[in-house]
Image (cartoon, rainbow, N blue to C red; front, top):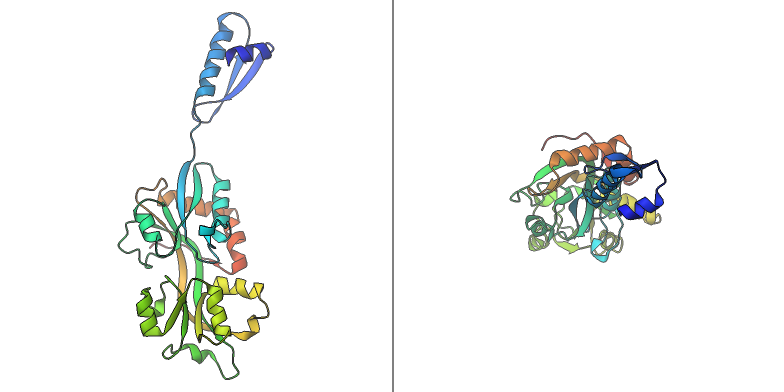
Length: 291
């Protein structure tokens, strides 16, 4: 390295290199005596030192549209990939990556350390016995009831679910069922059909195969935008099954602390990225609070 530089540098020259901790160091080069040899040797040492890499943080990505859409198929779509990109662009201390998982498998992946974080979660969705720290993301969505619009059908239709056929998303925790996600319980107590697709559930309602589907408000807004002819055919409840006040859950051995991640989210709030990502889906930015 030193010989290569000596052939190409004209005296006197300035050499700018990166130091051990990422700082820039200016060295002078002169061909006279020991000075040049010492400086070139120093330069070679600097160039040989490794630059500290960003810490890798693995985020579990389970199918939860519109937040994450079919990550197991390699599809880089949904709001979570957009947020991860914004997080990586806003700083260099951490490199966030997505690890595909599933709604039922995400708990074991978290406990076994395959992922460091679960995002767009709620501590009440089966996480009570899993060690974690939570970060309030300051994002709010909702689960609403959707039925086929009929002339005599009003909001009172959603008041009592007894005797109605429900279309639900498998693995979801619903407030009306006291957050019991067991498929047998839901099928037996609520005459529920469980699928892995909001589209399928809405089509069941439109085709008369189900009476009520429960859908996230953000997804319903997107669905109607993509299928404008469907909007007039649907009756959407004023009743809300539950508000999604989203949290990020971080495992105890994760390379990032809850405080550090909360600060990164605040940065995205301050620079407008959170609003840009979530406002089109009518996901509300709200005040954070302790959990």
